[in-house]
Length: 460
Image (cartoon, rainbow, N blue to C red):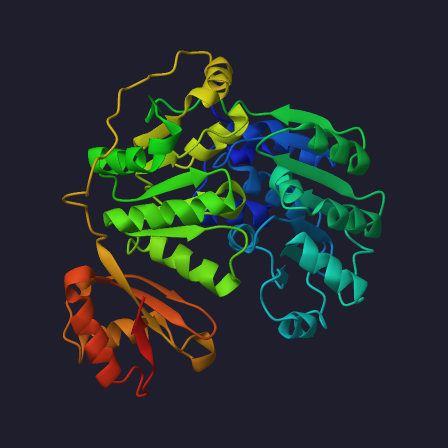
């Protein structure tokens, strides 16, 4: 086994090594070791890498190494398929840039008002992370100037194409200098990605990190089912393994809605996540799943990009995806950081060729297990550990997580152990409360004050 190389073996500035330390990194992951030397040399690159492989740090260190903070111009652009992924990438880039003084990074995505973004661009950011539609819109309005971009990154390029962003991407590519560095990252590598890569990259190095060698910590089980009994089979799986949190992947938006209806009928705490949702609804679903007040998230592949939940108990394929790379990308969300993971797949007879392709991709036999679909009503359905309260106040009201904790442990009389994750947005905040204490917390916040003020509070 090859010994992982330390980041100190690269030609990184002390400022960037400070960012590496801030993220707690020591040795490079395979994608970083294979990509970073070429990226730092200025080469174009196309890389196929599974989720959780460390690619954000790879392209992040590359684009930050080419920045001149003294020039007030946009010098790096990262395109992402969803706002959630853009937020995640932006946060990681900011931490990598800890040692770079006066660096401005802006996250520019659709689904939120355009006005504040236009105002923020009066002073050009050095780095922009955003979704293709909004970036194209701002560029067309001449609010965002891309003529000085040195590094262009396409992250999760396959999903951006799936979401219909190809025309926007091509328009953006035409607006950046021809001699800029181009970096394309994709979990899967269909023909459309090769075509796009040929159009935007020059003499690109190709890197492929094998997603087939999944960590041994992920237990993969397959269950052959009657298509008409798929929903009760899913309920049977959830009762059999009882994961504290599970993501159920569906191939279509319509299936996500239908599956949530079925699981709710059985008594499970389930929410849907799909691409047609309003941004506020998406935010609330992700908050409730991350803070453990919803135990089952039913998602489409596109909507789940950017989903970052620690210690995910299980990934369940309601239906097998059409290609093995998507399967490997899905199950890579469980069993991270050395934890054990569980990947469960329902497979109808017509999907057996897909299962065979997954078997060939992994180079080992699949484990098939018999499963009896649930008949009748479900008994002893596990309840979500937490409940979420929404407070109609946030950063614009100078509200902080500590203010919410103080109100709950003070006048409300809650023990701090009953308070879970707190998320503070611009105009609203969410706090997870241990389910048995949720009614008490809700009543106390409604009757009392937070930071000396009254706020509207509701239970989701």
